[in-house]
Length: 102
Image 1: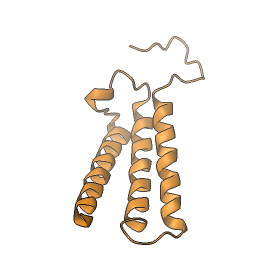
Image 2: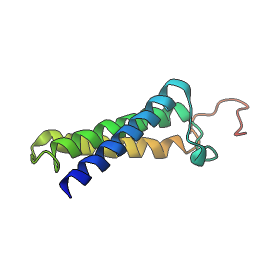
Image 3: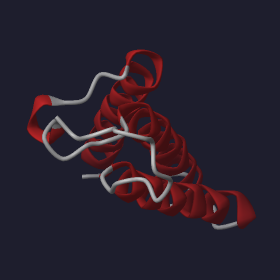
Image 4: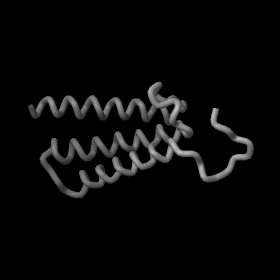
C-alpha cells in the first residue's frame, strides 16, 4: 500500500509539473479548461507552484515520515498555487482598453 502511495504521488507531481511548465512557457491550457481560463500563463505558473508545494509536502511529510516546517511550507505553497489558479480564471480588475474575452 505504501508503494502505491509513492507511485500515485509521483504521477500527480509529474503531471502537475508538466502542465505548469507547458502553461508558463507557451500559454498552453489543458483542453478541459480552455473555456474558463482568461490568463493561461498565470495558470501555468500557479500550477507549477502547486506541483512544487505538493512535492515538498508529500515527499518530506507523510511519505518521508517527517513533520518539520518544510513540509508545511510545501503545503502553504500548494494552497497559494491553488488560489492563483482560481485568479487565472477570473477577469482582471484592471481595464485593458477594448479587451474582450473571445
